[in-house]
Image (cartoon, rainbow, N blue to C red; front, side):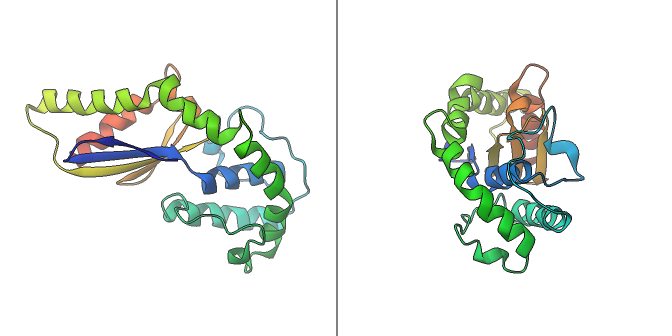
Length: 194
């Protein structure tokens, strides 16, 4: 569930993206390689459980790009059949095999979605966003102009914030750690938008 932080003039929406997390889970669970390593770091999780092939890996890369272009796959995944992937049959089969384990991990009591929802409290996301706006307003001696920003959370080991568009970014847990890039990248976005 996405949370909204803001006032009448600005709004930041933050939350876990089911579609992006499913795509990353499917990539790892099916052992699909991906040339863009920015979404990796450390050992793959979950470990490969299903067999994927080169065709599925290539189709996954295109699917990932499509999900990012659609602002994190705001539309929900159309499993269990994945009819929207009819033109990507190898990937469609990989999605079918990994769907059950993904749903189990995503919905279990200490699983993906609930773990990411705890990030608000654990990393003080709401407070950090409000503090960044206040710092911007103090620094520029004016109120922030109206803007909106969407931040999707993913369970990946990277420490960066991936800016996808002017008003959309994808954040992984690593960006909230010490020496992570959350505050700096948030201030960059706010300065550009507000």
